[in-house]
Image (cartoon, rainbow, N blue to C red; front, side, top):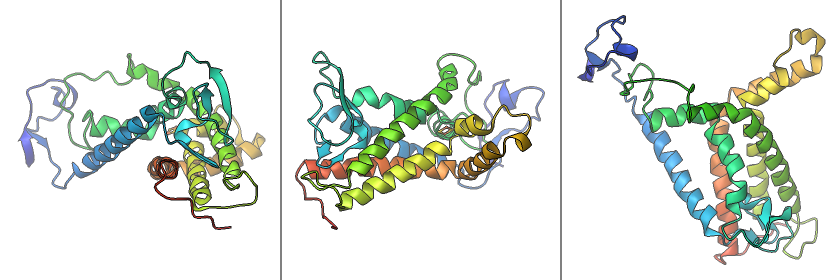
Length: 272
Ligand code: FES
């Protein structure tokens, strides 16, 4: 047996009705590697996105707008000809406009079934890995506040679809040059296209999406279209974790690319 001695608790795997195994766990592999890597990846994204969201600068380099700042809903947005720029929040809004919109993609990811597993394991060790008992004395699952809020995931999914539609529009506008003439492509256009494809794949592979498409049906035979769509979403759903990471990285890279252009580090290489 490996691991430290079993803590003196009488709940969970230490409940009196369970086999009295003294070792904390019996795993001999490096089970801690996955939660440690997950924690490092998520932490890196949180640090980067916080810096960028509060930065309130360098988020627009014609014709590209950072996905962190779109749609721009405040009067203090940089004048943009890319993406919707609705001044719903007037001059009283003095903070970064990213803070208004990021709540939706952030809420979508925070309540995502995969990310829940990821941060429950890596940050809360609840449990840290399969067959490794958690150190907590009590377990109330997601039945109480604040974790009860996880049930809002479906509504965040609806918001995320809307945001994805807007980012798709931003991507279409990226097929222009810096004088806003159509029919051009730069390296940034490719980065924007890759990012929006990954965002759509991640959004459509959502478990809530799968339920919206194919749930609450008694007979698939009477709903052939929904059955077909449900099958496609199910195929994507098998890759949900990979898509979650790929889209997280791509959205950060797309933002960083706009940051580099907007801060004058280099000019966007135009392909045609
Ligand atoms: Fe992950 Fe919905 S379950 S986005």
